[in-house]
Length: 324
Image (cartoon, rainbow, N blue to C red; front, top):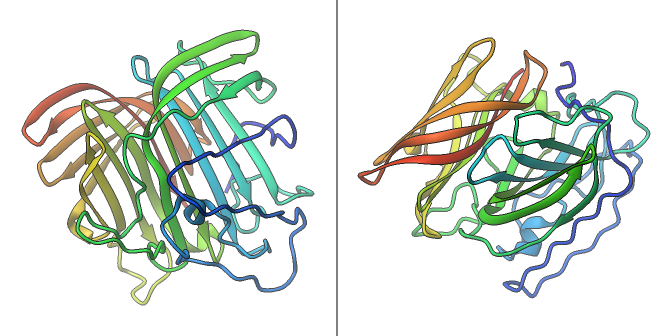
């Protein structure tokens, strides 16, 4: 698969500090930058639901068959064209072919920034000065198969894929400089992580993921069609979704019927229609942030629709798709 990632990996100048007052657990691990040539352990059930346990690496080490990434984004609440995305990978191109081939390290960092006019930073333009400040989350963590009534610590979603969103929705304040231009906005932030015990392309055939903030609501989804399984003709997607109102989880879980995703795609546009119980939302992309024109595409967009009987508009979203 051609690489959809348009920016060079940043091995320097990038630091993330995660501070939380809701957990007593702490986790610090040095990750070997060289891929090992033996089997590794992949964890899908954390010791607890404390943020540090959800956040911690799920790979004992990194070989050429496993992958893991930590994803962060923030999007302006008034102009979805303005956004910042950081992704930290521990993988090889064999396990996740969207990253460049023949890299000397399994540790990779990518940054995408879109300016208010919709311009996306180019390969040679990265933030020079930046600050990332944590304020407060608006919604509790998303564990893929937990429901409002029952917590499920298992983070596997289908065979061989893990997913958890530590911060499904939060306030975000962005202050950075891109190619000499100061970019400042207030908006909404998101943070999750994915990992797998076999190459991504051996697990996923198609993939749709996104998060929305509209009115007092936050919605997150992940839907993918598995490549491997007992029935090779089975195209039933594996799903997880989450709806919160003013920080309270209203719907969540991984039952097949929890959400329906209908993607709308042309050569120059991308949108998604989302349906859950008492939820009908239309997401329309306003700027393509990343993609290769064929296998991968990530957009920012605007959101309108109806949630729990309320007609809403003015929402913002970040959403993506894979076709492998």
